Length: 136
Image 1 (cartoon, rainbow, N blue to C red):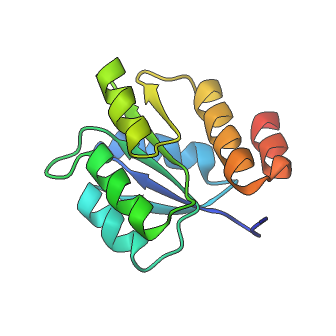
Image 2: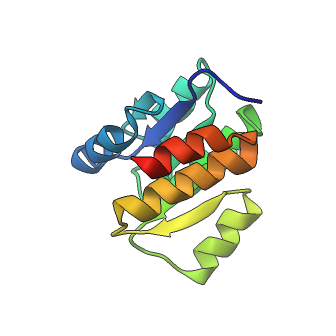
């Protein structure tokens, strides 16, 4: 399934980090930005989401909780958690919630882009976008 342009949901309560993520992915995705897990789910209930990046530690609703709920709405959408508090227990919980992966902050642009490209290629069998992402 190849889309003309994938919609990427970015949920992070850190405005600067969310802005950086948007700058990186804006040429390749239609972006949906959220400042909280609750806002992300509200937007996802009205928008098609093809991929999601969630900060783990957002107020009220964590990235993991938002991921679990998003998977109920958009089952196929790969979800990536990003956290400074990386642990095996979190990875286990994320795997059980069907997260694509958990990335540890700080993260290099190269690792982030490679992970997103792999998620898209895996979920949608779209190697063209993978090539464009990794060539940037």
